[in-house]
Amino acid sequence: MENLPLEGCELFEYLKNLVTEASNPKSLDLDRFTTTGILELINAEDATVALVVRKQIPYIAQAVEIIYEALSAGGRLIYLGAGTSGRLGVLDAAECPPTFGTDPDMIVGLIAGGAPTLIRSAEGVEDDVDAGQRDIDKTEIGAGDVAMGLTTSNRTPYVISGLNRAAERGAKTILLCCNPADDINSGYNLIITPIVGPEVLSGSTRMKAALAEKMVLTMLTTTVMVKLGKVYKNMMVDLQATSQKLLERSKRVIMKSVDCDYKTAGLLLDKAKGHVKTAIVMAKLDCDLESATRLLTEVRGFVFKAIK
Image (cartoon, rainbow, N blue to C red; front, side, top):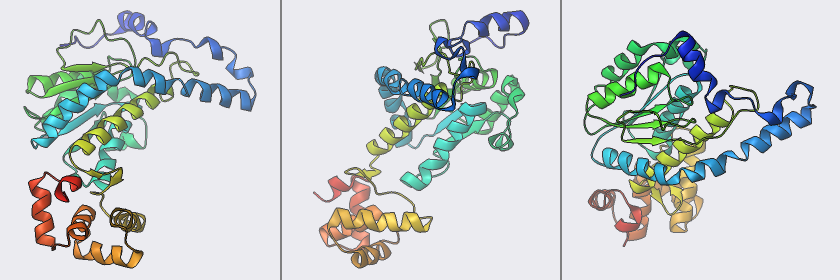
């Protein structure tokens, strides 16, 4: 596993060589740019991120398979990050239950410093090696689970210590970072490295690096959820109607899926006890709630298989 942590001059020398800490030659005179000039440069740099992430698809695909295997067998995905990276992990974890109807414990986001750092930055907590190990231990992570460390630098002590502890406990481990990781002797199952280059504002990894991380996380969980049967065609059919907007979206999905009117969609949703995919199967096969539920269980939740 990775040695932790670096300090003093050794850390200074390490950090100065990170791609994400380098100076972007395009923004050397940023403080002299016009408002439009600043915005255009940021936008142009952001436009390069998708192509960088695209090159990582072979590795992202491997991560999908690792996570899918775990979740389909009842395991969990645990994100571990600090600062912006941690917030992105918590965000992705929080969005999965309303979007895909997952159990909140299936995908969990851990952030250095805990919940308070979601709204008020406390950057020093990222250096707490013991906290990373302690937070992972609290999840009781083990074989069958996946831990994914999020650190743009590739060396954040909280993240690396936690990821190492997860590996010691038998979990599969994935590291996502925005710097080369060739020199990391980690023993992790997979490392994903979208190298986005120097930021417009030197060292401000909430810009391109964070954008790359957000893209990768969204790709991962969306693809895993498709493979878990949470999608019919290109529609969310396991979403939880926890707001008026989501309730109306549920009706719209039913209307599009079974070609019915608004009133009928509402009646179907009521009969299905608010479960969109069950309502679709009931309508497609003209069956009752119990039969639709049984069919979906038999095909592991895939609507298109249930209605064949």
